[in-house]
Length: 292
Image 1 (tube, rainbow, N blue to C red):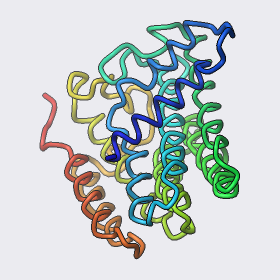
Image 2: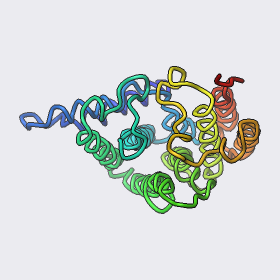
Image 3: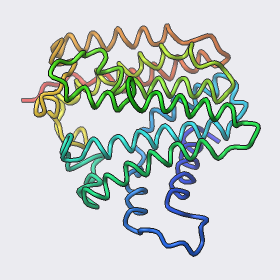
Image 4: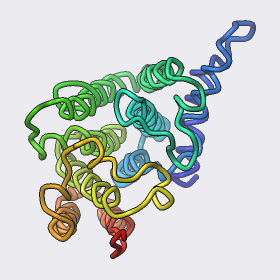
């Protein structure tokens, strides 16, 4: 089974559990159940779970079901963060992935509950493992919590936007890189390898994605992005374009990606991982385009 099919299967199972499947006869709030599925479909690029499973495969993938759960937990957290980011209290976005955001389609209260429920579902899916996987699962829970909350996870990244003075490097590490570090580390750990050597690769990929996102936000329009454009400038958020300019941010992106390939730890699937990073590098680099 290829990586995308593994992710689809794991996500379907996780959302089904979160909606109450298997609890015959129990009444559930139907609109919230529908919102959970709406928030994760269509799946987008699912880059983080793909990286997680690719690292697990490179490290031997001796517990594939555990790796699948790790990958789906990451994607659930990512989707939850998007639901919350789109709320009027933050980005106030009307569209995400080419369709109305959750709060536009279901209401603000249900959007808050949807994000909360997806976070809980992420940790729940990591607990549903055989006894022999319990120790690895516990360590995966710890890693996911570290990269999701304070002081260095994605919650901290959102928190930086409320500070009068922003450390751009720390902001990018928390807001974007945190879940990419989680992806590389959780993939390795799910396959029985120690996670620490995989931190730099995840951090570099994450930083590259943030810089690329800043460039797309500045250069592309809503039809190209599938979501509102120019949000960094609109909300006065720190960005690589603001700090370095378009050309400087583009150079920085290439430097980061070169370093990412060089940082891949030695493993049986090292060559395949390097190729994956190269493919993402091509996808991330914005087309030479200036909005008129």
